[in-house]
Amino acid sequence: MWFSAHFAVGMACGAAMAAPLIVFKPRWWPAVQPIAMTLGGIWACIPDAPRLWREDFTRLPLGSLLGTKDLENWLHSIGDVFFFHASMDAYRNAHGTEFALAGMAGMIALYSFAILVLMARAYLVPPHRAAQPPAAQPEQPPMKRAA
Ligand SMILES: [Zn+2]
Image (tube, rainbow, N blue to C red):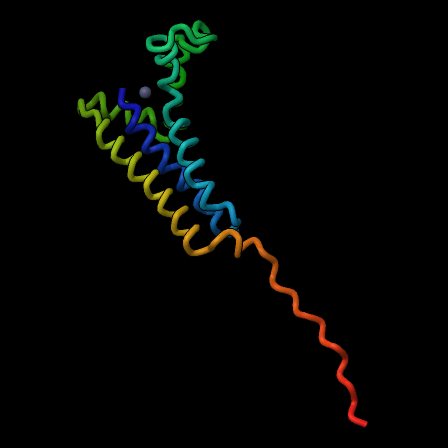
């Protein structure tokens, strides 16, 4: 199993899918990136989930339903929907390389990058200043006319 490589590729794809949101410049955009990365990583690993149910977590509920070899084979048959999962598996099977360490390094690099973006945002745009409305101008008394 090379969970980490699938997860890292999924993280990168999730971040790339969320990146266009920056066009609209929502205030919450930097927080979306790590969430999109995590969801993308989980999405990329879904085809291998039946094996987890079948071999590693056999006592989980719905194991007989979600841990079947048929489900695993079907998920792998449409595997490229899960961020190139099937192509990566095929490459691994053809070349015998695992990329597990590279995947782990990629995960750490991508999460570190997301944290740096959040830190840079917190440093450059303090939330208390960004949330305040512009200061109201004190009302001027009407000017007196010179007589
Ligand atoms: Zn797989």
